[in-house]
Length: 513
Image 1 (cartoon, rainbow, N blue to C red):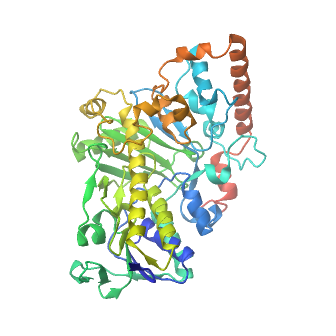
Image 2: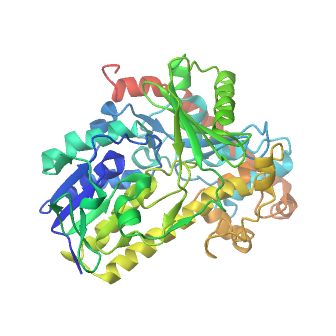
């Protein structure tokens, strides 16, 4: 059994301070200390979130207006993917929010009838047709949608954030954690001064004792990996990328470039992220050093920035080596790992902070049972977190699995790889081909598999021809015209709203800073 009265979190950054904020909010009576090295810089990759962060913010009672002005933050409504299917494919979106249907018998499949009747329609039209909030994305505007002019769009839960993760960690530290009693020690922990008992539980770090230790030391994984020697399972067979070049570039036309989505562009040996924050754009090239040297990758990245018209003359380029995979267990003895120290999926689909708040919510659940944690509690935590991690890993791999690019060795190897054979479990919707061919399962899914599949020209139902027999011609035309009218109505409303830049200036960054 592991006591939880006194907890030490080793490591700061966004993961460490999100952990401290969560624990002090849910267990204000506990003694919580963050120990972080004054000499270790934060990784600084996780500047984009998913909508799942909102329940975590709700749990902590944090409002947008509390942290966004201090973290260079903007709103995000979607993720766009370009050139993943083929070079010059035109790109497609995976929006947040819920699809809105015309009638219950047709669901999302209605778009495929439209596509069958109008083959020239691009795959990118799918998101605009199915997700009303794409009207904001397409017009680069935003509103709280209080009268539901855009049906199904819930501002509080269907928006995510672009922000500076380092600033977010600092805001949590100074404005949330310390005022609530979290202690903060800046000190380099020495491996030789990590004391364990006869059962391998950790007793103290540099003489600081606790009942339970949270490892937030990033890819070093000082407690779980180095001290307890918990095996690490690499997912490099499924996800090829292991390096990144990251930088920041200034705006040239802020109102136009400050867009409400993360843009992901596939290049010859990986892909580039574009994350527009309030003051500047965060961007980086994720690649595999199996196919390209670091120097070649940097040149490829700079060529892309040149093509996009970015000025990087004053920018610093940071090289990041990624460890993709997860430890066999993430709660071992009296140590629980959160963040990169537990595991990491490459940055595609903005998942860097996703596992942090999802693992923390699971940790709170087992800690709520009692003031001690049993082995059963630890095992259930490990299974729950591992299943979540594996399912999201397979979702990320789906973006590669559906590619038809063959222009480089990198993409040729991807298109010749059997992702089905390398799957992590048999329950994954995105890689279980039998389930994907069952249209009800595929199209009723609330996840994003149908967006990725459709955007990459993969119709899970396999043939448009089946649709022409479902309704008579006149009824089909009425349904499609009704939807066309709705889409135009949403678009017309979005055009009248504030640009994202002016919305943020009016509601969040009121002083312009």
